[in-house]
Length: 552
Image (cartoon, rainbow, N blue to C red):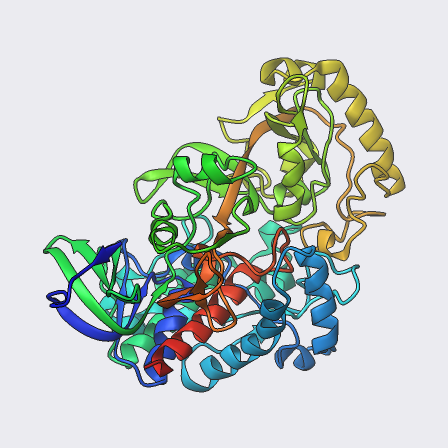
């Protein structure tokens, strides 16, 4: 906490609202604050704009959105409310859930009316638990079209891009139409190459690029490589500014109406992760700058914390030598584990989860604790595939017809493979025999793989009777370790329906707001659907920006 006496601080500059972070939450917060009458300063710790949003798929989850009708999917506020209550599992504030249903639509309407960020429904992207009451088979997830980064002028090079799929500019709607997962060689690679060379981007980079363009049109330029290190308060405890550090030295920036924390999660901070998370994300998928800066600043103000043991979990694969922004690159695995001819096993050679289920929930059994061995029962874990998989589908860095990557363990038999990776051979062989029987029948009674229509999104429709089940029977067999990863943490300061940070006393911390992964997620342990992270982040960014701008 950085306070001053009666004379007050000597400000370097003054603004109405200061926003920290340029992910979806921060960009929308800055747009809203400006549009509702505030002078805005937007600060970014890294050298790129876009935060975690820019390296994501860029999908935004907004239930009951107007684009659903365009693709023939009906929804209602009541259905959405029932569904998100199930997902939150009683670990979220009812007022916040109710507010999200309305404010998310207001956010969407504002952006589509006043910025280049317009959206289309993704009709085949089901909610992550569509069979639960109120769940939907698709279209609650929306996305932007391809974006031309040349519209950003000199800011083009400062837009963060995904290191994994940034080179293939295609929307999710296009990807599903083309059959990217089941028929990877059928993609129009020539067209994708033309788009890439022309500076076109999709997904999170498209979303962040459009929001950045909106800010530049408003004369608001992010201050890059400028880290907020401390909040400034007055004698009453109100947050009135921030202390920052960059190459030019230390500055004090006044925030007359409020400071909005949108600094991302704490998954890259080993100390915070060990202190709070149930499992440790050894292989985060997000930018390395997510080290809990905003969380620490909120804690210094006595903020009440919520959902601190949760993260947006995602199984990760490590390709030796790959790096991104000076840190190891960890690839979140969304498709390989879901396709036919694949399983995930523990050191005993046993399956322990529905490999095709959503990345957040399928990860939770990884941390199941063995009380006698006093360690995680299902770590280390390995993804196992056979030659049929390599002949049909994308396998990490190889396409059908290519050899498996060199870092992948392989052997002509399952027993030999088990010996190479330290897995019980008898257990693995028994598991595969059982699994092959399930694949033949098309039913997985152990983990219900392929039962949900969500599972089918990453399945092969040509595979019958179940698009997610296929025998492992053709050698060689291949294995790679699967690590605990996350696309971000989801715990932080509790907030109210205006996005204001709450003190441990239950009252708002005057002048302080939070949105995105820096704040306690309204979804508790759950994940409602693709874009649930970004949809909530943008919604509370909008709410916080509007309220701060209108505060006096």
